[in-house]
Image (cartoon, rainbow, N blue to C red; front, side, top):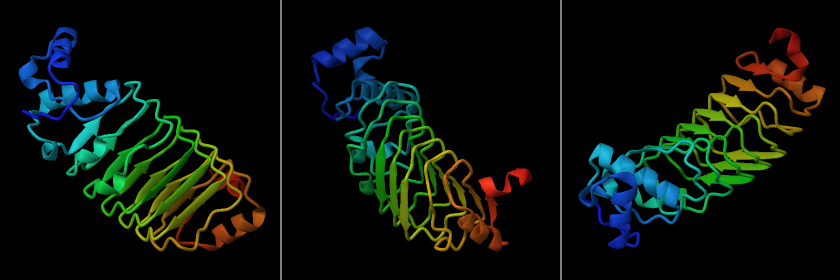
Length: 219
């Protein structure tokens, strides 16, 4: 049984009364957000987790989660999916999650995000937030990025040599670097205030499919 502190004792009894989960299986995770704690507790029971290192996938959708502080304890985590919650910031050091392959933070309330040094991350979903600034670096295995339907004005990236597909449509980007992505195959950048000169540069790259406001007739 996982014995990670969350006001043990009485809280276990309360959890049993509210959820019907027997205290013997009520894993008590060291997280502050009650909604996240409840979701993790249910996942622990369903998956038979006995220690944090057993946890490889967390899927907590539409749970009214405001904070993910504490998730860094799951060092073997490969997939973290928190779609449709109430996150306004990432109050956690995700660089501790070296095994993470998929990160889904779509449909939250994030306004800025800086992600770096996740060596195995291959899929990143950030669409339907309130992002204005996005900074990504040293995501050396990232292949798919979906950050459409935000308010991004500033998007900078470094060392993402494996990125193949980028969805950044419906933002406020005036420019995007298309020259530092050697594996790029597809980019959807429609509904951004980009100049025609940038569209012309995109159209010169015959090995990449670009969707932009300058070639709307081809959509």
